Image 1 (cartoon, helix red, strand yellow):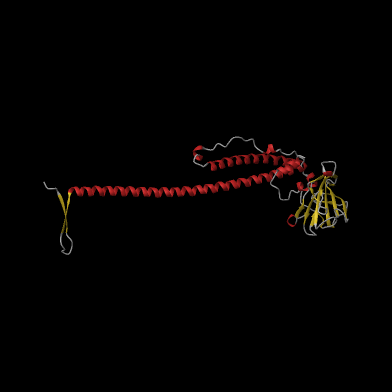
Image 2: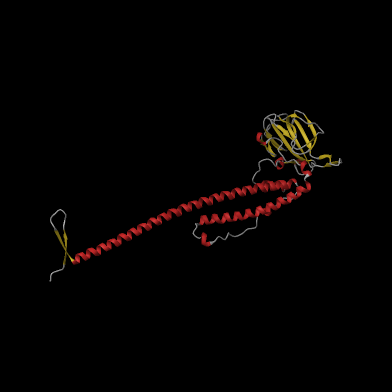
Length: 343
């Protein structure tokens, strides 16, 4: 029995020779099966390729989002650090104001919240994060919680200082609190306390601060008071003005009044003195000009703050003037001031 064959007749145009092609049925079935298999494999390959392209695009997008999140975390970390520095600056201002109002200082324990354990982050949101990023989020959450506490605590402290100011506002006019020279024209050249003598090199106590600048720079009173010394000399502090900070005058009814003070201030190495003994001066009033008289290596002002009762504190009643310079740039660290306030 002959095998079945299928004939294909091809009739070309232009009266060319007609061609016949005969194939067995099995061969055609095999060709059909192979064609279907090829089409399926090709479709599968195309689908997989498109899936891989889509997955690659998703991975790229996720990588970009991850990089954006990492940058966002770093930016948030920097912002939190800036807020912590600002809170430290506010804490220092708070301690200065408490010091001037003779209010007790807040202890480090008062300024820090009681905290323990780790921050409980939502597991469904943060389980996919790496240990480093998860740790960063836990740290940031704890720091933000601490800042919230400090803000509330600082607000309460400033409220108390404000009430104290309302009770003792008049007496603050006789507390040294501003720079004796323009800050933009001058700079601190020597701090309060132990230093090497600029002439001998021997360790010595410096009972004030030195502020250097140009000769002729104006020097002003840092609080209301009475000039008790104004003299010129060629030794030690050279030309000097000393003010006892107390207030006296007449009220609206014409009655005399006097507010006793606790401090006196000293202004040394002046080139020119513009006040005399007994003058009543106000905060910001010009006393003289910066010079280099007396024992001096160049134009500067020696500025000292002292208790009128010299038995108070050490150093014969002298205090660090920087604690009274509220308009100077503040140091953002609190520890040095807290330790000083505890002396």
